[in-house]
Amino acid sequence: MNDNSLPSSDVTYSEAIKFLYGLQVFGAKPGLESTVELTALAGNPQDRLRFIHVAGTNGKGSTCAMLESIYRAAGLRVGLFTSPHLVSFRERIQVNRQLIPESDIARLVAGLRGLPRHGVATLFEFTTVMALKFFTEQKCDLVIWETGLGGRLDATNIVTPLASVITNIALDHQEWLGDTLEKIAAEKAGIIKPGIPVVTAVNESAALAIIAKIARERHAPLTGVKVADQGSSGLPQDLPLAGEHQKQNAALALATVEVLQQHIPVAEKAIRIGLAEVSWPGRLQLVQRANGQKILLDGAHNLAGAEVLGQALAKHFPAEKRTLILGILQDKDWRQICRKLSPLAGKIIAVPVASKRTASPDELAAECRTANPGAEIVVAQSLKEALQASSRDECVVITGSLYLAGEALELLNLSPAGVSERGLNEWAAKR
Image 1 (cartoon, rainbow, N blue to C red):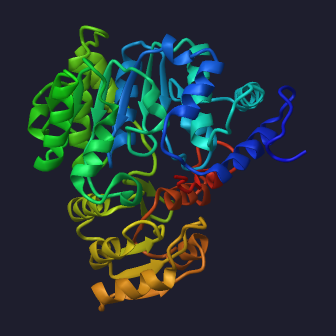
Image 2 (image 1 turned 90 degrees about the vertical axis):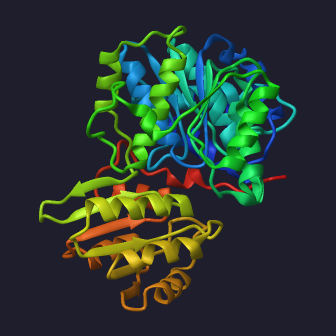
């Protein structure tokens, strides 16, 4: 029996995960046909749920976490669908911030695997339908629904939400989304539905113009958000999520809640509690070790994310002697990321990301030497080796990839659940 020939019952969790690994060979293909077919066979569970659909280049996960926390504080049963996961596949599907149980993963895989289909779903398409089934079974009052890649042709785009949210637009995934901000904006704006309100923090004029045009064409009311809009509308003085950019994400979440007040009323107290208690690992996450060492984990994987990290370091860690542990995927703009981040540290350790898509640590190191010739720059064969080499350093920043942040959480024994399934984040585009 091969990985993709599981029976439709009596599937163990390990067998289910093995089956999901087998779906990776089908890549990540744009288009909604497979997801529409599979959800129809599954009884169209999305028709019994309410959604807030979130797209954007950076900040999607943090904005989703804030929205989830606010609505949960308001007493709702809230589903949360995000990707990629940091360690456990179960992180992708949560209800009231509880990871989906292993037994439900096994059961859903068995049931969906047994449905007769014309084609084979990709891993993300299959996971999307698993999430819809689970959220329906759990009788979620609301689902915070994050896109995977882009928006227009993303598998998540089969739903009609209460609101469409677009966090920001920056260059990333250009091979599939386009090589200009305008083209990327058009793909992200593909989640806009006729008559459904849109909330966005996009401030780049050309990208915003594209979003506004599509919103007008679809008669979708558009609300633009700036940090200045946060005012006194429930935003805590100190958000649990570090970084000035989180104020923008919080303002976006607050604006979304306000737009939906007639659909889902939320008291100001619930907003304050939700924002004050939000958590989202791997994004400017500070770990204080017993020996006094500070480790900052951040999944900055594009130039915009690197700029945000640089701003956070300048504000929160101005005095420390920083060590930068840097690992980036080859299909990212790794040269520009190296140029942006390497001047921020006196010591840089280039490492491979635990992915077949990793950029060469030797090439990362060479780029860093060009950008910061005065720094001590070395290559480590693994993140574990880099952590050992920097164990006495005052402040260590681990960044360049969410995959790397997830591996760090695992090595530092901060993983939320179970054995690592980080390999399930691997994908390749199929046209």
